[in-house]
Length: 345
Image (cartoon, rainbow, N blue to C red; front, side, top):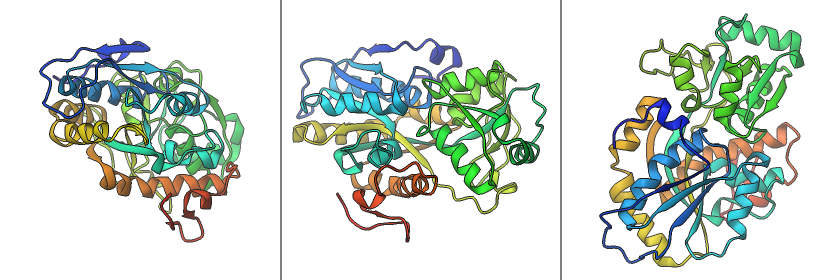
């Protein structure tokens, strides 16, 4: 599989089936298609990377894998749908792991936490602060000044409060001490497109959702929420947010496929093997990451859980500080006073 193009991603539809061939000899032999529910709109970060990994799994299993977009309530609608389905191995989800791990804290999906899922991570993503090309803001310093003085006059397009863009602007506001006016869309892709069209003044969605718009001159990137500048092919390096907010706490935001616990053991053993042998060595996934500004970082099982915990802790505790938490993070084993995980659920 070659590099994805912006046109190919834009052509993605809400339900897309990947035909399978050349099955591997595995313990689990699914006898019907597998559904991966993406709880966000088509074209966003979760949708993009899932459509790269789904055909790899389909080929290995010898069975079709269908990606179903089911957006709503910052990913909670689709996530709850997966939890409501029979635990037979035929319904999975895909998301940023921090979402599934903290939905109970925000009250969006009350009865779930990180240990309700078998975790298969594929990439780490970083948010980028961008504005339309005709924007008055030429760098993040100018935008920061405006946010501090004009506050809710500044509109910010995201995929919702718990989306990567939503948590990014909230973290920026916490550190920079400002207010803003959030406009929400069904996914990160639509939020980025809306900003390029002038519906919002700023977007803080992920680089993978903005990269084609940035390359095409339809968005101007001001800063990336990472320790180091971000380099995209054909674009000047995007400076680190640390240039303006040196004390901002950052953690890699990992994305992948999640299978609910309770499925047959042979399902997990089979997907573990596919992830290690096929996904973790995939040139298609590596090319996607390099092209769209993600970090190639596939892992599964306990290693994936360990990688995810820093961003899970950050998001859970930040929701408390912002007054968005419905349940205390201690209910999922996180001590925000020390910002550590104190128990496994």
